Length: 493
Image 1 (tube, rainbow, N blue to C red):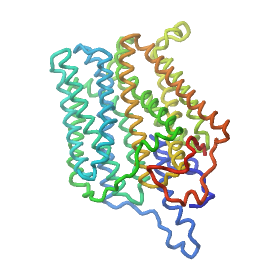
Image 2 (image 1 turned 90 degrees about the vertical axis):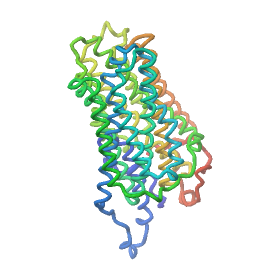
Image 3 (image 1 turned 90 degrees about the horizontal axis):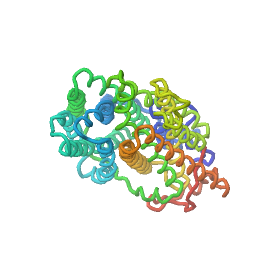
Image 4 (image 1 turned 60 degrees about the vertical axis):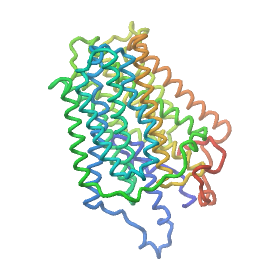
């Protein structure tokens, strides 16, 4: 690898997904990194430089199957947001219990995803994918019949059980999807995984609006029947389309090796906080909207729910472009602080009621600001994490990317559990406006931690860090004990 190439990110504006620019930048960088040795060959060998291959028909069908499943998976997670909190309250569930029902999904994924990653070679990637899909679809349909359970503890317990099993299936599908795509597209890993990220984002945006619309058309059961059947149909098609996956690469190393790096600890805190921010409104926003604005219907709440993710999706390319220009740390810090402002405006905070009215237009403005701010917070974090690992001796290969993927999945899942659980608990104690303000305080504090870390590194003359030289990059790397050992550097290039 040439010593002149010290930047991690692709050229400005390239490979930035319209939904998840951060993940696409990592994928593109990893894919491009495998081509760098070819670029260093002599002119006489230039004819041997590998060219990007067109996808075969089988690869295209595989990508379509996994992309449709990713859309269905993300829709199934967010489809209950507009109407479930209100329906659960009718069955005697408190806001805290509703928050736990939302949060347990991510908690189960947090626990089971690493386990399935270990046993995927024994189970088989295709078998894991199909089995998880049928579990996911079956639990989605089953959740639609839970309104027939007795009120009170029985209803809440059944919601917990059904949601936990559904998350188990989701974890199987997510783990297998990465392995199948990486194995099916060995020369286009970045492009393939970037495609999955796009469709995951589409599912996140469409989930609440589809849930609200179907609830308005056919009541509580219809959304679950539709999404469950869609998952099953996609799984049946995938059974015939997906090729056998026999040579799944075993990822060596451990996420503990990443967490031992102080810089990665700070980044992990940022990831957890972003996961918390993205899921904080799930259990409390719909009941607050319907109780505060009497004329608002559930389908309308679903459309309003789309504003934050929709703005995030539209602004992601711009955020990725700015991040590529080298403003990653300052952009992320500012994004956390701006996210805190957005949560203060949601309600708004009672201390501001004399200046800011409680109105739908004010809520829409807060959600727009939230979408912009979350994008600015999380998009720079992805390349920063990979930069830290490269600075510590991790190689640009599929093993490192597998560890980074687990790193981010773990952080988001933990944040996805903390967010709705804390939201429901604080909403029970203090109401929606104050619970949102508590979330704002946490996000501003995380921004201060990241800001303090950057200032500390600058005072030690370790920001930006000195790039690895040719000898350091050529040295063999042990993922269990990455080198060199001077932890804590983060590159903003």
